[in-house]
Image 1 (cartoon, each protein chain N blue to C red):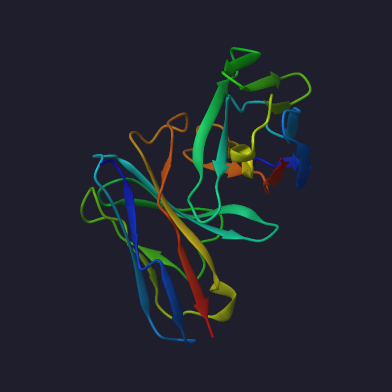
Image 2 (image 1 turned 90 degrees about the vertical axis):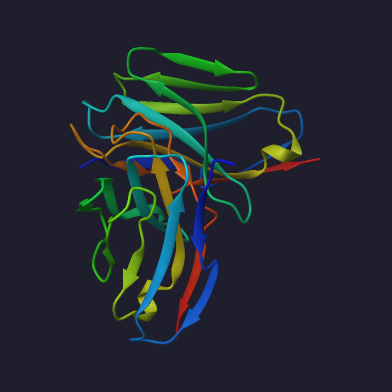
Length: 114
Length: 113
């Protein structure tokens, strides 16, 4: 089944404890992206990747890191999480890096930073 | 960059009635406008999109209209059903040549049986 998977789905952690949220797609998509969703703010892009080893900042990149060493994986790294990073995170992918391609979203990761 | 405003933030309709959600954008060069539906506990899913060379596109009970002069586009759902209850997001390219989408803040649609 073609899909985007994220792990973990739920995570509660404490301030400053490094964490990684994994994202994987099995559709051979070139473009991958991370969004955060907060009440009243909609979806805001954190980072995106046009292809392997090519990443760029989105609208809210502060406090996050990403890497794209393989085409299928795009992990999101929080080196020192803070409470303001408590949010619902979505990974997405699309076939090409052009904007008029459908983005396929993962099921989301709900992160709570205490 | 692009600014996308979406209204209303919440919308309740009776089953069988129509629902309309409107979005405005700021960048006149924007040329692609998707709509995503997010059901409870799931990620958003594309339901329809429109490119700037057409004014309207339909897919069964769903339609999107685009007014480039006024820089707004709308989602129309006819004969609403309870399964249409969800959060809907509009989006537009973040800027000319951009590989990013700017999303509206979302509309929570409730269809009352």
